[in-house]
Length: 288
Image (cartoon, rainbow, N blue to C red; front, side, top):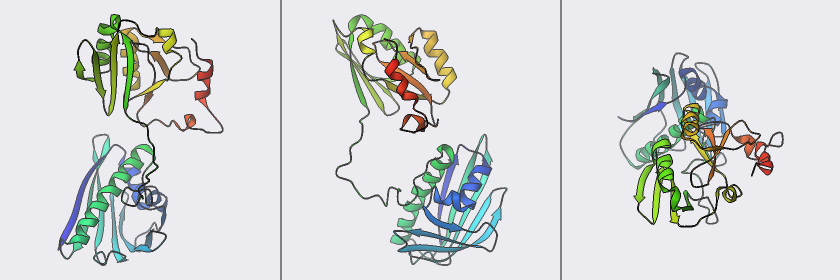
């Protein structure tokens, strides 16, 4: 027999991880949006994919609120899944949870086994994302199911600013030391900084827009895991803090560009078109 094994660290309590696995509501947020699941040992579950053309039927073999869920697979569209066992074992790891996953009982390591291992890796990352942020990628939103969209358009992760040479030293110190960006290029013509997947490019000129002109340009967003600590570092450096009627810090960095500082994982749905609240509209009255 051959088993699929995964080990996933999740930055959330064991109780939250357990509820995401042991309840129908949880399953629908990371595995498949079309799912039913009993909440007692001996109960049944059905998880459906591809407009119900592919169905997994299982029974609940074990449920332990202290951190263990086991499903016995009765039937599945994948022919090698029948009579296998799916096990979720949770243990506390610091402030979070370590999830030990096993799908046991495959007869051999064939193509179906390889496809199953790949699929489980994606869905377990969806589980991690759902528990940590409230937003997973269940079927049909998972990466393996999404059809390619040739018309898809996304924002890139590169930004460029024409900045005055007189600000070189101050800009380099702010982005390199205060924000902790990696310096990718630094010379008399251009400086390039990288922060996670974002790239900031400063093109040095003898004359550039002044700070008041930059206030009329696009505002960017910085996300930090320790917002208050980063806020103190930024303000201690000495930036221009903007008077914007919003709970977040808006500031003008050296070089002119304006940023908003928010938390990683923070719920920002109110800035995305909520009919009940729209803090972003306050920018129409920003102080220039």
